[in-house]
Image (cartoon, rainbow, N blue to C red):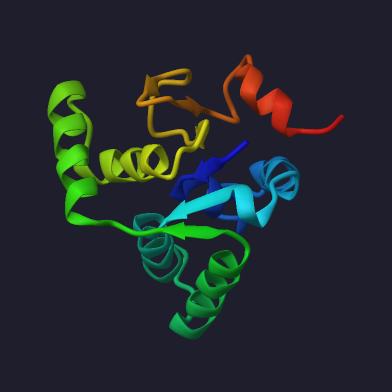
Length: 148
């Protein structure tokens, strides 16, 4: 099952936004295989920004972290067609454009799920279900990802 990962999930995995969430995110991410894990290129750029601006990491450390995530997954690029789909998605559902780019990249990569807090848990678009790992009642797709 292909799964895309949003910026906030990687930020939690890096210990940002509260160390309480880090073990849970690492447990979920550890269950994913690199060939079935998609990270939209938009997410890598956003993560670099979060690490250097919000967390105030040195750029070299942030760059090395981005390279680690790049090597641990497949990276989905942003094309003109993907941007067209993202703009349509943003207009139809009144989403921020960069969130729409991430969801569009997940759909183009034929992902079943997008792990994210940026959308309504359970929102489905083009076959991709948004799953919030921190929802009170985790989506069944998350339960399927995590081996007890």
